[in-house]
Image (cartoon, rainbow, N blue to C red; front, side, top):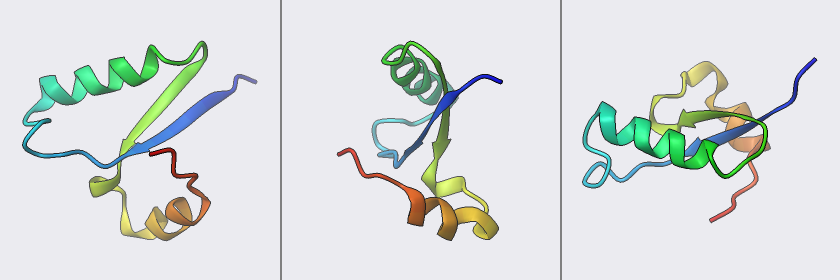
Length: 61
């Protein structure tokens, strides 16, 4: 069984304007950790899981 880090991000739409910008952010975050990273955009979380995810979240900055 492998471990990973789950990261939820809130993106500035002026800075991250398209898919290429988003992929760049995901790669940047992934490069910070020596294990697999799952990056989720807060704005597109399904309503059915949003409350639980936000309740469990640890705000880093």
